[in-house]
Image (cartoon, rainbow, N blue to C red; front, side, top):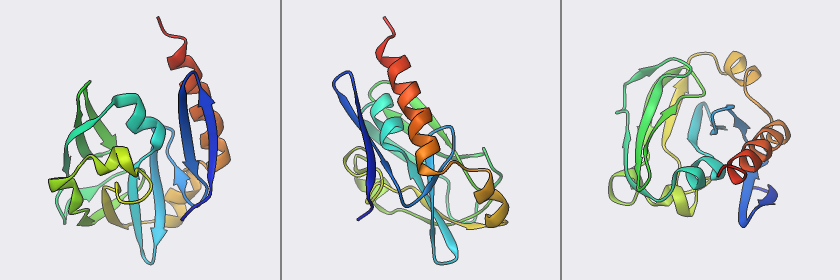
Length: 149
């Protein structure tokens, strides 16, 4: 169970797991052995609402950084999830087919999207934000959203 950085903006509580790295778009990356597990952050899933459907690219799909790894349909909108790493989809979370709401319930655990065989993890990792940097970025974005009419 990871530790979290946590903030409250308006009436919403947002958490950032401290054991992984983040893209500015709100996608996390966690090294698991030789593969990289990726998923949506707590902020990104809360911003977009309850997940109704998750379509993750199938195993064997080659991704570049920023390529869409998943399309998430929520009650509010459709969200294209950009990959924070380049590589090949090695495994899709089987829960996404039957219970995609796991993204809302446990975005840093059971709600992961895919495992990717990264092409160049050291280079990709260097381009990602550490938890503290993402926390600052996310807090600013959350405050901005809270102040929208």
